[in-house]
Amino acid sequence: MKKLTLSIAATLSLNIFGADNKPNIIFIMSDDIGYGDVSYNGGKIKTENIDQLANDGLRFTQAYSVASTSSPTRYSLLTGQYAFRKKVGILEGDAPMSISSSTKTIATILQQKGYTTGCVGKWHLGLGNGYLDYNKTVKPSPNEVGFDYSFIIPATNDRVPCVYLENGKVLNLDPNDPIQVSYTKRIGNIPIGEEHPELLKMWALSKQHRKTIVDGVSRIGYMSGGTAALWKDEDMSEVIAGKAVEFIKKNAQKPFFMYFATHNIHEPRIASPRSKGKSGYGIYGDVIMDLDWSVGQIMKTLRELKLDKNTLVVFMSDNGPMVQEGYEDGGLKNLKDHKPAGELRGGKYSLYEGGSRLPFIIYWPQKVKPGVSDAIVSQIDLFASIAKLSKVKLNKIDAPDSREALTTFIGKSQKTKFNEVLIQNNGGAIALRCGDWKYISGNNKNGKETLGELYNLNEDIAEKNNLADLKPEIVVKFQKRIDEIRQSTSLHK
Image (cartoon, rainbow, N blue to C red; front, side):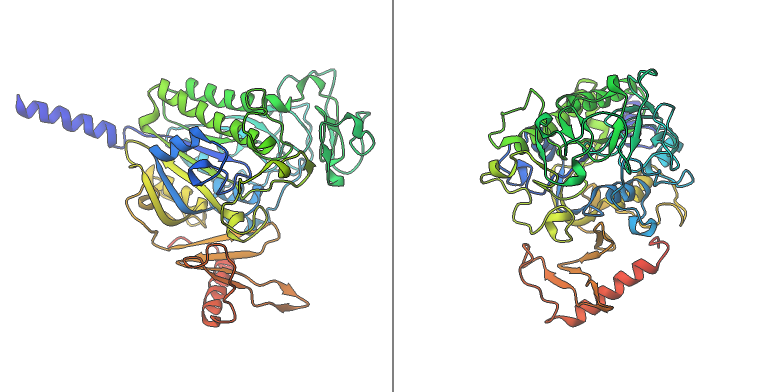
């Protein structure tokens, strides 16, 4: 009888931790959230749900986005390839799909392992093949690059068309009110911001943001039609989080992967009625509360369905913060003592730490013990690490720049085998972090390469003291490594 009991226990253990009990996987990609925007990192705006995730999971102090802007980071995360190799920059709302249908994505490999895959929220990786007719099913969309289900905003919330696409079709579209979109010429008779500022909820600071007015906000680009399909900004958090919750509930009985990309806290910032005026830090704080609420909805659903113990949740951001860029919404004047990047220098678009060092949490109670990791990690290495976890063998052409770091991501090791991360900005400039050192490659000015910038982050986290002149041997070493990566086709060993 004792032997039988032991045998049953062994079988249960195998089912809990073995290959037959695949973990659900959720990537939560927030938008423009800085290292200091979460209260567990010292932020003044309360993020109770994100803090709980950090307390229950493994939080990383030296985790990096792949780029300091949106589209390049998202491209690299999903494909495991540096965006500079394909010249993927910040994509317009009418850009063609940046991911080839022949390219394996992290969703593709998980599909092959029996996962149901979903993409919910901000896409911003292009759609179609160059000409987009939003009145028909849009292809290619996320559904053609590995996702069984998709519910997306096409680009960003400051770009037209301001509609949701579900599995490539515009939600609530009236065929008698067809959509037209242009980024080159004015179309239709909808008022535009530069001519009718009296219709605006907030003034657009840049001229490119003063085009078609949707829901009281002038956007980048022109559109007409689709009146019944237009989103309401104040409802976006609830709509997007609601679709994510629906996906989890529908697929609760089988392994699933969900890429949940919030629109928060990207401009234009319009808080939900639930959060408006509640943060004490103006609109910037209110939309951070909306983000936190969305994270709470995901975690609450997992707990209610008893899926939380065997779901691997990764919380991250696409790049550092940008408090004011396209609109005057009062965000800056109400920040008070809140510091979006914490003690870090720079923000979105920057190769300084504030542009790419992220709040980054991995939660998986069955495998990951709560704690803090100082390991230097990059989002791009999640692809190869998830492949390792799922027992997928990658070829050299698959996720060519992603390197396996599973033991580091789940807290079994305090460093990766390679101990380096590469970061790009939208202009293609590159920074390299290795050990204590961070090198920002020099710019080419008047045909001459400048020396660049070198910082010892262990001693100078705010990057105030450029040591490039004092440590030329390190500069040479780092520049050589950047050149090697640029010239390589695969970082797989």
